[in-house]
Image (tube, rainbow, N blue to C red):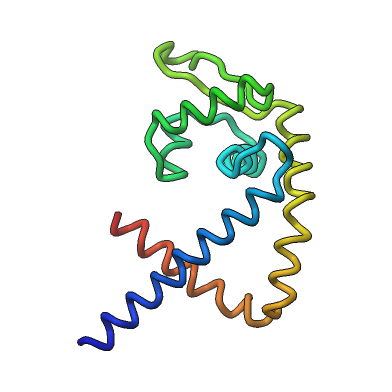
Length: 146
């Protein structure tokens, strides 16, 4: 039993440290004024291609509605998203990426890809491909136990 506890602690220690280091490196590579949370929301809105409410985005990112509303407000001020009332329920709002937001996301992605590609190259594509299913399974397990 002690060995499994030690293994679990080692696994999560490595994941947490890798997360911290990755966020720091990616944050430095982003265009001036853009935060990782901003990029993540813009990337999500680009990939899904549909409007989302702050509550839907908060759920997708596992953050509070207040935190997501704050992020969306900053993105709106920057001109990266358009926020409108929900036509079915005026108490709710809907957000969509703007053309400027798409350009900002593309610029951010262009600055991140070389960094990410270098890490994958250093680790080896085959090793990364072999690791991805385990990381996905871990993520799913954590999402279902949250």
